[in-house]
Length: 184
Image (tube, rainbow, N blue to C red; front, side, top):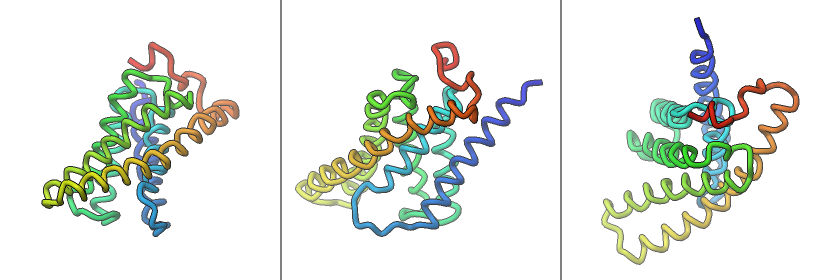
């Protein structure tokens, strides 16, 4: 009997719980748009770097969204699930094209930007449904895109180095490093 899928699920659940715990404990009031993308993109890239299986990023994002919804972290009520699920879906789809992204900064930037675009799209949809003027919508989308890209870029610079350190110190088994076979 192979216990790896249970171990992977527990690891992804712990990663999602850690993300929500950090988000709820610190509750940064920086006044900077997009600062939460640093932790979200870090979590999503680590999910794939630690468990390089299809669906792992989506699973981690779904668990994080459920935890946030149940614990009341963030604004939006039940729609807070979309705040985590849409970027997770975009990152998951981008990782199908670039399966080694968490290990390389350039590829991580592309995947992180896909997550930012989904996050900005969700915000634009909310504004549009609220009946915001097109000028307000464009300014908000531009501002969120700028801030989210900046913080996601910082996360994409950190994750490959973190994964390499984990692998170097043998905290990640060598088979966790994605190859063409494990990414399928």
